[in-house]
Length: 208
Image (cartoon, rainbow, N blue to C red):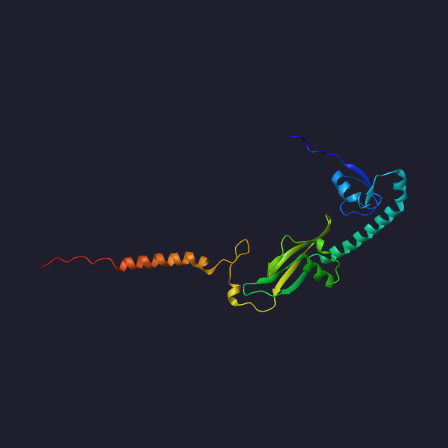
């Protein structure tokens, strides 16, 4: 089987590209990415000394902007550490939400409190679908992250029965019949033993 090609193309960025570089950076990319995206849209071009020199001022400005953004994000992360946010949602008697809490919901909640967190910075593997307390990571960069707590509360009082419900590791309700099965079997065996004990035949008496 032929080895995969590792060939790359060197380009000069004409504008900032997330996870790739800023304007004025010389980067290496795969040919397909260059042909299908960067080059046709004018986002990058073949590097020349003249163009690199021409973009020096733009690159310096972009670097300053990035430093400002990073400084603001540091302040946000410091203010978020161990923060708790309560979101009230409609749900059924089992605490299952009518809908879910998503990255956008968490982002909106933080923004309302004055913390500029884009939903892309909210690390949520799956939408929250049940009332409860959930740890959620907010991460801008590898070294800029904080853990907050999202408390999802019902918009009404849940029944006492729902408080006693049990859920498996997947968050699915364990039906009452399944929970009581072992006890039922135990009770059944005890009843059988008692019945056998009371129905043993009496010893025969010999005729006089």
